[in-house]
Structure formats: C-alpha cells, structure tokens
Length: 569
Image 1 (cartoon, rainbow, N blue to C red):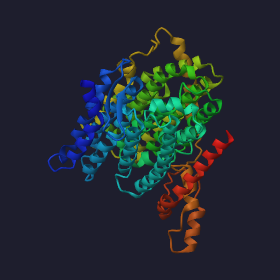
Image 2: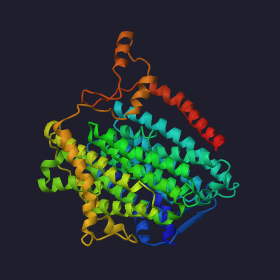
Image 3: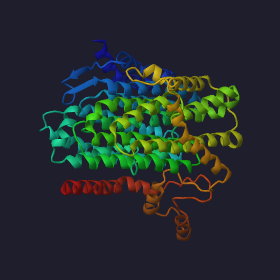
Image 4: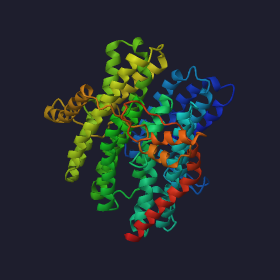
C-alpha cells in the first residue's frame, strides 16, 4: 500500500505543488515546495535500494490503461534524479533570490520535474510518452528563463530538435505497438516483439534518433551546447545530469536489448558513441565558456553509454549483467556533472570559502569524472570489467583512451573558471543555500558507491593497487598535452552549437536593410573562429521560419532515409 501511494505521488505531487506555487499565498515559498516535491520519489527509491522487488500500480481508467511500476534499473535512475533535483532546487533558492522571474521559474521547474519523474515509473508507452513530452516542453521554459537573445535563440533550436525527436518517437511507438498485434502497450512487451516486426529497422532508426535528441548523439546534439550555457545554473545541472538520461532510460526500456542480435545496429551505436566521446572532447576543449565545456563533456560521456548499449546488440546474453553497471555509471555521471555545473555559480563566491576547501570542491568532481577517485573510479572500473567480459576487440582500449578527452575537458573547464576569477568576475556575496547544495552534492557524488552501490561488486583498491595505477597513465598523458597547449595556445575556438552555425548561415535572411552590410555579415560566418574569442552568433529571423517550415522538410528527409533502410533490409 505504501509503495502504491509513493508511486502515485511521485509525478502527481510536483503537479499539485506547481499549481500551489502560482497562488499568492505560496508564491514566496515556491522554492521550499520544490524541495518537498522530490520526497515521494526519493523514499520510493530508498525502499527499493538493493532489492529486486517490482512494485506497480494499475489504473485501467486512465488513458488506455496505465501501468506505473518501479524495478531495479528504473530505481537507480529514480534515485539519482530525485537527489539531483533536490540539491539543484536548494541551490536555486539562493540563486534566484533577486530574480523577478522566480515565480515563473519555479512553476516550470515543478512541471519539468513531474515529467522527468513520471517517465521513469511509466511501464506503458502512453504514460511514458506523455511524461516525456511534458518534460521536454516544460523544460523549454527553463532554457529561455532569462529572456535574453542568446537564450531565445537556444530555445528555438531546442524546440526544433525536440519536435523532430517527438515525431520520430511517435512513429517508433506506433510501429512497436503494431508489432505486438496491438495487443499490448507495455514497453517490455513492445521491446520483445520488435525483432519479429516487418519494420524492425525503421523502428530502431526512429528510436535511435528520436531519443538520441535527448541523449545528445552526434547530429542530434545541436541544442545541448546552446541550451546549457544560457539556462540558469540549477536548470543546467538537471538538464545535463538528469534530463539527458531520459534518452538513455528510453533506449533501455524500448530497445530489444537481450532479444536481438544485430551486428549492423551494434556497430551503429558503437560508431556514434565513440564519435561523441572523442568528437565532443575536441570541440569542447575549443570552447570559451565553462558551461559550454561541460555541455560537450556530457555529450562525450553519453557517448560511452551509447557504446555500451551497442555492445549489447553484439552480445545480447550479457544484457542482465551490463544494464545494472550502465545504470550506476549514469548515476555517477549525473551527480558529478551536477556538482560541476553548480560550481560555476560558486566560482564567484571564492572569497567566502576557505581556499583549500574551494580548491578541493573544484578538483574532486573533475577527478571523479575522469575516473581517478570516488564514484567515477568505481564506475569506470565496473563498466570496463563488464566490457572485458563481452570480449569485443578494441572496445575497452577505446574506452580507456576516452579519458584523454575527459581530462582535456576538465582541464579546460578549470582553466576557464580560474580566468573568470582573475579577470572578469568580482567576488560576490556568499549564499548559504548555494554553498550547502554544492557541498551536499559533492559529498553524495563522491560517496555514491558506498551510499547507492548496493549489489555491485566494487573493488577495494587498497588490495588492488596495480589496477589503480593502470587507470592513471591515460589521464597523465592528457594532462601533459593540456599543459603543452597552455604554453603553446592554438588561438582557435569553435562557437557554441558548432554545426548549427552552418545551418543558420544557410537558412538566414539578411537582417540589415543595406544589402552591402548583409553580404559582409554573412561572409564572416564560420564554424571555426581563429581569433580565439567567444563567438556568439546573433539570433536571426530565419530561425522562426526554420521552426515553422524546415522542421517538416528535415523530418521528411529523416523518414525517407528510414524507409530506404526498410527497403534495403
């Protein structure tokens, strides 16, 4: 009975509190309501921690018959999602104290939270899609919160990519339901029926690219490096730590993992994953804003998770072993990346924090993400052990070398924070809410293995010192390269959003009335800026036209390619 009540309250309580936050009586306390909103989800995840028990609640009268449930993999996602949203809300209370738009922010925050939590407990595709879309479009309000031109530009591109993703997802869900003979709308039943479908490749194509928008796979990642830097810092933390994992969770829930052996799709996932892991590392190192570097770091880390899923198409029998390891790796990344995003705001409060504690607070999550301490060390060891067991040539070697990209990104991030402290940002007054949230998330992220690693066979490295030494050599090489580039700078940068700059250049109409000026402005648009300064292309009226007309054209091209796959295979 308790589990059923908690399941029901997990997505519903944030909705109720969002409604209360809009009333005059509770408007001033909206931040505290946001803290309360995650309690049912957190308690539900704690009661199932380390357990293989599955709890569910059936609601035949809701939609076409809804089924909400919690199982071990979903529980891990629910756990880190609720923890991250709690600490980010605590941080936001201090962050938004002087913000006149805070009331609107908190309403959108709670609506987005409801969608994020709801999709994690939805076992049927109707509820799942409803919560997924709810999270996506409510999250748009968080991205454009400041109302400034860069935020509005990022929001438009976010919506364009979201609509493309939603249409692909709907196509996959309709065809997946048809694969069961329209006898079931349960995600697990659809996943097991997909291999027998006549539209197998089309379904997989739509699932991969549709949820790949949220997961940040190459070509579908364009919104990420634009949205993260312009969103308020607490929103950036949940965007990168929790909401991006919704794509991964959807893949785990709906892909026929364990039911299908496919070398072609396995290599597709692996290729896109490594392209993200290394490509995002290179582009991220050439960014000029700390939050942009972290955005590309998220794309890089999601690439490693995409590689792992690809391996399960090559070795389906290893799925039960690998999925818990992948879920824990996602937990580690969510908590650590959240702490790194929160440190961007704390960076301006450095004079109010003891210097040693401040430096530890910056370096600990960075080293954890590289895989040298805390949950990051255990997460990478566990994931690599699982990949070794798959016995797929070259995979572990490439995953090991991906630490080069992560090391470079973390060095660049810390270097940019140092530059902001020294040159551009005066020290601001300390805020206790922000500092408590930052410190709390640091501790939880560092101790995640001990707190949440129940059931995982983590190693005590005191007894295996050579394994730790074996983890060091790639980051050391990466650090040496980074230091060399500090002494020999390239004087080159890539604008936030990378490829989207080229799309904008092709689609924009002149904003100036003078044709000569218009031609001069378009001639200067380039993907790579060799002047080593943060280039932020101005928004264009053509993006509005793009969002109305070219979305349909681009979606049509994607579906045409998908249909060609069906005919060829």
